[in-house]
Image (cartoon, rainbow, N blue to C red; front, top):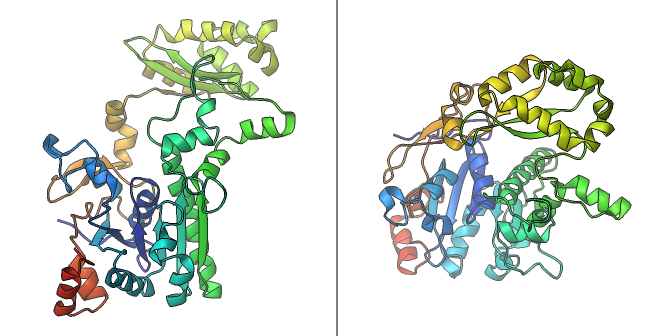
Amino acid sequence: MTREPDGPLARFRVVELGAAIAAPYCASLLADAGAQVIKIETERRPDNLRGNFPMHEGIAGRDRSLYYHIINRNKLGLTLDLGRPEGRALFMDLVRISDVVVENFAAGTMERLGVDYDSLRAVNPGIVMVSSSGFGATGPASGHIAYGPLVEGASGFASLNGYAGGPPMHSTFVYTDYLSAMYAVNLIMAALLERTDTGRGAYFDLAQAEVALNAIPEAVLACAVNGALPVKMENRDEFVSVHGVYPCHGEDKWVALAARTEEEWRGLCLALEQPELGRRREFAGPAERAAHRDALDQQIASWTRGRSAAEAAAALQRHGVAAKPVYDIHEVMQDPHIRERGAFQDNPHPVIGVRRAYASPINIDGVPRTIARGAPLWGEHNGYVCSDLLGLAAADVERLARAGAVR
C-alpha cells in the first residue's frame, strides 16, 4: 500500500535526470519533504543502480536492486528518450509545469540533447536547474568521466585518508556523491525562495570535486597559507589533543571519544579514575597533550580495555566527555535511540516486498517519517505523467510508444 508523500514541498514538482547517487539522492530528499519527483530514464541508458547488487533473492533484474530501491524512494518513474524529437518535446511539456530539474550527466550532455538551461527557461522562466557533475561544466577537466573515488582522488580528499606511510584511501560509500546531493538541495531551496520574489529561476553548475574541497578546509588553508602539505591524521585531530577510538572488552569492540576543552579533559581524568593525570607536566595543557599523544593514548586504552564499549561510553558521558560505542551496522539498526526516532522504516515495493530501510534524515514536525512509496518500477508511471499530468490522449501516448519516445 502506498500513499502520496506529504510535507512542506508538496506544491513543487521536480524532474530528475539522474543515475547512481548525486542527482537521485538529491531528488529523493526533496521527495521525502513532499515534492512530486518524476524520475526519467531511457531504455538506452537506465539508471545504473538498477544493475547494482544486492538483488532481491540474489536474482538480477531491472526492478530487483535494493540499492536502487532505497535511493529512489517516494518517486514516480517515466521512461522517456530525450534523444528522439518526440521525447524531447514531451520533456519540454513536462518542464513547463515543473519547478526543478536536477541532473548529473557528464558535462555537455544536456546541451547535446537540446535540453540545456537556456532551452528550459525559454519554455519556463521560473525553472530551477542543478547540474551536478564531477568537475563542473567548464575548465579542461569538464568532460572527464567521474565517479566518487576519482573525485575524491582529484580533490585531495583521498590523500588525507588512510594510515601514515600508507597509500591514499577513498571513502567506502562515495561520500562526495551524498555530500553533493545535500549541497544541491540547499541550492534548490535558496533558488525557490528567491523565485517567490522575482519569478525567475536559476541555474547551478555544481562540481563535486569542489564540494569535496569544502569538506577539507583545514588542509586547503594549511597549504594555501603556510605552504604545508597536510599529513594523514588517522583517528587523530589536529586541534583536539584527545581524539580517537580505543579498544574495549570483546572482539573488535571500540569506543570513540574526544575531549576538546579543559573541562572535558578534567572529566576524562575523573572517568579514568586518574585525577593525577591532569597534574602531570606532559599533560598540563593542549600543546603538551598533543606532543605526548602516544603516551596519553596508552593511558586511555589501558582503562577502556577493561570495559565494554557501552560501559566506557556511559562512564565518560557521566563526566561530560563526548563518547559513544563504535557500532557495526547491525548494532546501529538495533540502537534504542535510533529506533525510537524512527530512523528505520518499512520500505514497500511490489517486487522486492517490504524491507527495512533507513528513513529520510529530514525529520519534519507533523510529517511522518514513513516511506510513502517505493522506488518506481520500470516505466510504472508513464500513463499518469503522459495522460493525467500532460493531458495526452490515449492515441497520442500510443504514437509516442511506437516512435520509441516513451517505453
